[in-house]
Structures are given as C-alpha cells and as structure tokens.
Length: 209
Length: 209
DNA sequence: ACCTGAACACCGTTCAAGT
DNA sequence: ACCTGAACACCGTTCAAGT
Image (tube, rainbow over the protein chains, first blue to last red):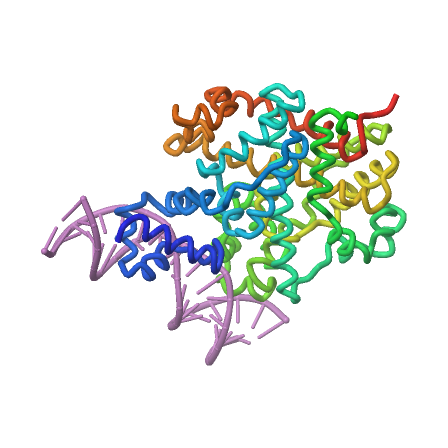
C-alpha cells in the first residue's frame, strides 16, 4: 500500500460520489487497511485532498488555441470552464483552499501572456486572471448547486420566483416582470458570451478595428 | 423552545465558529434539549441552515446609492461584497445551494434596474447580475481561503510561487517574472476597480461622454 | 518503518416510547 | 403536539502496542 494507491482510491470515491462521501475510514476500507495505516502516508485528510488534486491537470490534453490574443484569452477561460464542468469534485476541493496543481499553471501563463499581448502590464494581467477565474468558478459552483436542486424535487425553490408575492410588484418591478421566466433566462446564460464582455472590459474596450 | 430560538443559537455558532462547528447536537445542547427535539421544528440540518440565512438581509441597513445608473450598479456590487465580507459564514452557507433571503432581493432589482437604465434589455440585465455576483462571490471565497491559510503558517504555500522551479523559466516566463511578487500583486487586487471594468464590458463599453 | 486495536470525542437521523 | 432514550451507522484522530 503506497501513497499512490491511497490517492487513486480517494480520487475514485470523489469522482463517483463527491466530497461528502470521502472519509479516511472509507478510503482505508477500500484500500484494505485500517484507518490508521493512512496516517503513515498522509498527514491528515486535508493533505490527502491536496494530493488528489495534484496531477489531475496532466489528464487533460492541452488544447489548440487561437493566435489572436483576445480570442486566446477567451478560449483558455472557456477551456478551463469546460474541463472543470466534467470534474465537479475538483471544484469542490478547490473551494476548500489554496490547493493547486503545477500542471495547471500553463493556464495562468496563457491568460497573462494573452492579456499582456493586448496591452496590459504584468500586474494588471495577473489581476485580470483572477477576475476571469472568479467568473468561471462562480458559474461552476452555482450551476452545480442548480443541478443538485433539480435532482431533489422536494426542495425546488425556483429562486427568486418563490420569494415574490403580489405585494412586491411595486418595490421589485423588474423581478416581478421576470417572474416565471427566471429559470428560462438563466438557462440561456452563456458563459462564453459573458466572458467575452468581461474580457472586453478588462482589456479596456472591445477589440479595435 | 421555539424555532426562532433554534435559529438564533445556530446563527451564533455560525458567527463565532463557522459552518464546520455547526451540528444538530451542538445546537441542541446549547438550546437545552436533546438532539431529537430539534427535528420537531426543522426537517433536517439543511433546512436549519436555510432558516439561518433568511432574515439576515434585514440586519443590514440599505445604503444610499448614487443616481447615475452605472455608478449605482458598481455601488450595489461593492455593497454586497463589503456586507458579506463581514459575514463569512453566510458565504459558506450560500455556497451550499440555492438558499436565499427575500430581504436581499432589492440588490438584484437594483442591479437589473441600473443595467436597464444603461441600455440593456431585461434578460441581459439579469445575466449581467449573475456575472457580477460571480465576481463578488469568487472574491469572497478565495479571500476567505487566503486568510485561513495565512493563519495556519504550517501550510502556507504561496501559490503559485511554491510550484515554480528554475526549469520552468522557459515554459512559464510571466509567472517566473512575477514570482515572489505574487502575494504583493494579489494584495493590490481591488475588487471595486475590477468590477468597474467588468461593468464596462457588460454594458458594452466605458461610460459615454 | 509500517501497521493494528482500542479508544476518545464526536456526527445526522430513525424509531419506539413516553407525557 | 412535543419531547426523550436508546440505537444505528458513521466521523477524524491519538495513543500505546505490536512486527
């Protein structure tokens, strides 16, 4: 039983059942050892979680990217989104902290390089990366939440529709007008289109020419 | 022992010690009852969490907002950020799902109204709200993570610096150049300035005139 | 060095019984 | 209607003991 085997088992559990299903005891059982045996190879659960993340980036082939820097910036962001969309557990673990994977650094480099090619200085480019990442991460978190909710019909709330009463029409006219269509409007949310606008803003205006 | 008392105790625990410290048994103990008594007032832990959220918005006074719609949009977003920054547990609970508070709907209304006053149609304004919320939420999550990490000096990793070796200078030139300054650059990240650019992008260009 | 067994101090929730 | 007690099936982690 080596650390690699522990991490492999942990990743399988995360993939199949998500973060909530991962416990030291569960990993130990599936690895065929006592819970305490794990602690000879990882410091604690947090470290195990960190180890499940590192190396994941290598499993994703690096995409062909457009040459135009603005399009490249958009393409990297969309790639990051599509990749993590298929790995919901990675998003869950990322939210826990600062854990990171060396194999994913090229994404940051590519974003910063593209932004600089569009005229930003290095510091602004690094900050632009952060803002773009927030847009991607937020979308991943709330889309996952929406899917969970859709699967539990008992608790469907159709926020914000469920909170609106007739008395709100005056205070909240736009929400009232959107009422009933909210889900529909949100399903038409296109991250790529939104990111294009965000990138325009971060680069100081739409593409020239 | 009424539902209100249960929620009050739960909120205090969340405020003082965060989501991880909240358990049904702990709430029961502090309320002076057996764990099972709670289940006569709330369906399960998820419902209790939802109840802790609802009503929180009323505790925050609604701010004076500028008249200019673009400035109002920015001011609402910044207000949302500053408010939640002081309530880290609310951010934790929000990440769990779709839980929402009626008292916070004015924020959505105000964002959508401002965006429409700047020329967006209702659907685009709703989508703009979502993108802005992601920028705010992402910043809240990762700033909280950075603070947690800073308090546990044992695990400080200074991502991405810690992952870089000399061999990466060629593959990752910009990250290498930023190396060492990463923390510094991130500390200079100003959400208001970033949001101003994002809003420019979402509204289709910087303010006219 | 690597692993086990027993223990500590917890979890959320169900179920049958009490008033 | 509201609450309790006992139980079920779990947690992460420590500590002393084994090989």
